[in-house]
Every structure is written in C-alpha cells, then in structure tokens.
Length: 224
Ligand code: SAH
Image 1: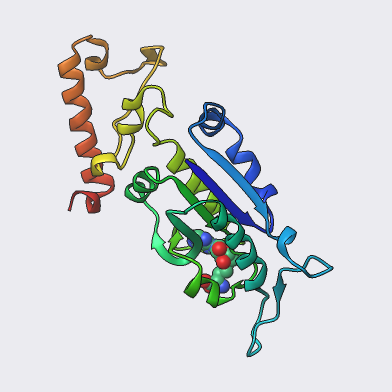
Image 2 (image 1 turned 90 degrees about the vertical axis):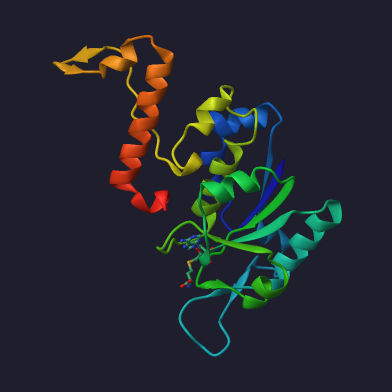
C-alpha cells in the first residue's frame, strides 16, 4: 500500500509515522508513506499557498493551483483508490472505515490548514472527505496521522499476532475486554481468577462476556 500525504506542514506528521508499529510496517514493506510539502508546488516566488477569501471573511484560504498541480503529478504515476480531504464536516472516521481503507492500494490524504481550502478542490479533485470527530483542529495533519496509524495497523500481516488487531475495540462492534499482567496480586488487588486458570475455553467465554458487558455499559450505541 502507498499513502501520499499533502500538507503545508509535513513536519507535524513525521514523528507519529516513524515509530512503533507504523515504522515496522514501513520497514517490512507493507506500506510506503510519502510526505509532500505543498509549498514545493507553488509558482509563487514567496512560496505562498494561501490567499484572502473572495467576499471578504476572516482567515486565509488554501489555493487550488498548487494542490491541483501536485495531485495531477501523482495521478500521472498511478491510479488512486481515494483522494481524501480531512475536514470537520466530512464523514465520521471509525474502525470500519479504517478496515476498508486498509484494503486499498493507493491513497492521497490532503490536509487542510488556515480557514480551509478553495471549495473547488473539494468539488473537483477530492473523492472522500473524512472527519476524525466533532471538534476543530488547527490543520489536517494530526487527522491524517490518526487515519494512517489506524489504517496501517490493520493491514494483514502488519501486527504479527493478527488476532491482536482483530480483538481490539470496535472490531465486531464490541469494546475490548480488560487485560492484566504480572504480578497476579498487587497491594491486595487481584487479577480475575479465571485468567490464571489455564482453561482456554473458560478464558475466552469470560473475555467475550466482559466485552459484551463493557459495551452495554459504556457504549450501548454500538450494540444497536
Ligand atoms: N473553517 C473550517 C475549519 C478549518 S480548520 C470549518 O469551520 O469547517 C483547518 C483544517 O484542519 C481543515 O481544513 C481540516 O483539514 C483540518 N481539520 C480541522 N478539524 C478537523 C477534524 N475534526 N477532522 C479532520 N480534519 C480537521
């Protein structure tokens, strides 16, 4: 899989995508992530990529021209499954969307900044708009990092124990059961006995019941 991220501040995304599982996924060849600085694609001699909004309102607007130039160049090289724009008014991101994006070959993620982006980009160049939640960020970079992280970790093979990704919260619309590690007793606080029993079927039954109970209590909306 290949992900191209377009941003005016690519430095903001570098660190989250260069550690832990995502770094290993890149090193093992499961994913290539390319960061593009939009300023390299403007013809403006001051490297500006934004301008005042028509009609006069607060804030600056990202211009269509450098974005179109960069996306066109990328599209000449390969076909993209989706050209994504991160936006608070986009479709709400969730595990299901992460799973389905992890099955694609090539993605572009365009990060907005400033007041937003010339709307013609959204009308003519973008195929999918994603929001990571009902709050407003300064830019789309953190949203892009979140999308990449959650997509890459479910690419089959990325997490060596595949079960581990499948048993996370939201897979099967259930929250994950509690997990514990040694010591079995700490300050008198004990680990549930069944987990120490070595009885695999009983352990699995307990984990499933815990998942159901926790989902009912904390996120009943997932069970509908
Ligand atoms: N004026 C816009 C917000 C601009 S915030 C509005 O009211 O809708 C600047 C950029 O940050 C946006 O263009 C978008 O790319 C990104 N962004 C902000 N909040 C986001 C969210 N919840 N999900 C995804 N991207 C977001």
